[in-house]
Image (cartoon, rainbow, N blue to C red; front, side):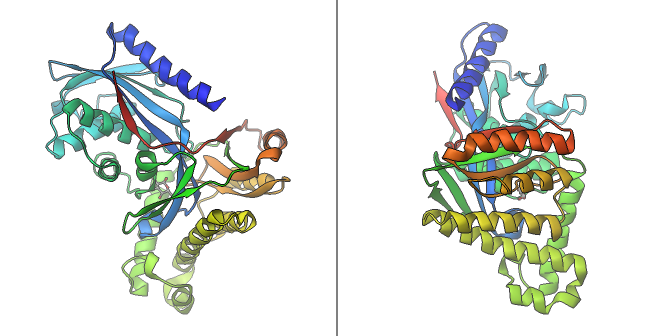
Length: 387
Ligand code: GLA
């Protein structure tokens, strides 16, 4: 089912290219979205995360052109634009093209000479749902630019390039998780990432369970300012605790500093320290088939994000509660930055159909919103096909 959908998207992007640019593309780059199983708001604290790349991706079909211009068509935004290296930050250009332009800016800053090109971009990662469609666009455009320039970089360098696009071109102070997952994902595995050393350890997903993504249909609001504020609060808490990053703090240290930190910073630090522990517990449990323990860690993660980190919302709480109450669900939690978007659940294969049939309508009845539920497969990271 999902293989069919993915190949349809891929074929559609190739087809639109042939029609719009009257000829075959030379390259097709692909970068997947991601779902984070656990380890939320830990990446920018030098901590641990455990995302998986998913079988939803952005594709870009392209062919070089001789005049240095970029002609870019977006299937999803039903729009097209043109730019050159000299007009990358032209405010008149459409907003959706900021991410592709950011990728070109980053490549140029590395001294990589990307020629002009014709390109068609399209995919099936819902936008604004917390499944990292923007990280996928950054990664796919860096992959494409490198291939067009005849250059190559490690997947890790590509991911960090995407992060730099966010920080310096877009102005979003994100961590490394989304781009690392998109570039370095491994099929049928989640990726344990140490966000300090950037060491990645693929963890096989046990057979017999499915990852179900539940899009609340509530789109994130205020996310950028709240995100930046959380990041500042974590830095301040680390400073008061006298550690380089919250990754280095222990539960005991946080408890002992409760008064000095004050209520808000205390709770932010308690979330991060607890979440790092839970992520490692979850990874160990997944390896040993301890799914009940893994599920428990997911439920605790959600509660901590809701109560201590304050990045959940009513819709995410309802979705996670409904999911957690279903037979065959090991655990569910919000996933991604929060304030809307998606929740994720680990569900026994035999219980998935009943789970989807129960959770969707119950959520709709309580919220009036129409959710999307999908069973997803862990996919491989980004890459380029040459024709
Ligand atoms: C967003 C950011 C990530 C990470 C998550 C929260 O997705 O882009 O770097 O911080 O939020 O875990």
